[in-house]
Length: 114
Image 1 (cartoon, rainbow, N blue to C red):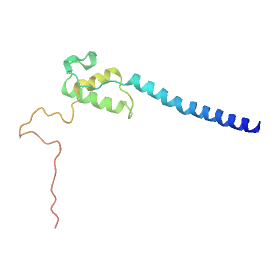
Image 2 (image 1 turned 60 degrees about the horizontal axis):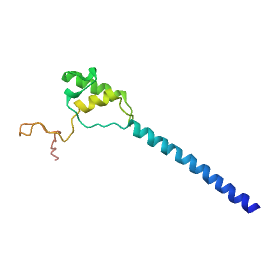
Image 3 (image 1 turned 180 degrees about the vertical axis):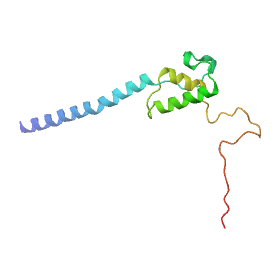
Image 4 (image 1 turned 90 degrees about the horizontal axis):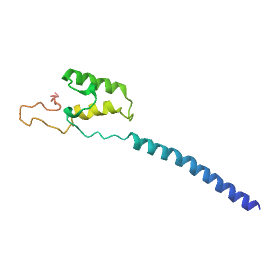
């Protein structure tokens, strides 16, 4: 009798622990799937939100700063902000002008030590 109580207590404990540890994972996965948005680039002429249409270079820069300060790390973007980023952000590998007069992405300096 003592052996049955001991085994059943262990099984109940394991079942509860399994239930506790599996819930946050499945909840996180479903939330993550729902908020998963495509950030594939689109042409600025394809935007649907009025606030993302016909923006000047200064307005685009201001909007990027606003979005940067608005979100925490790994916080999902709103649909409007995601559309803006898709339309106006450029990939670091994009190169629109490949001529030799283009500015390098970064500059190096040499230091002479005596």
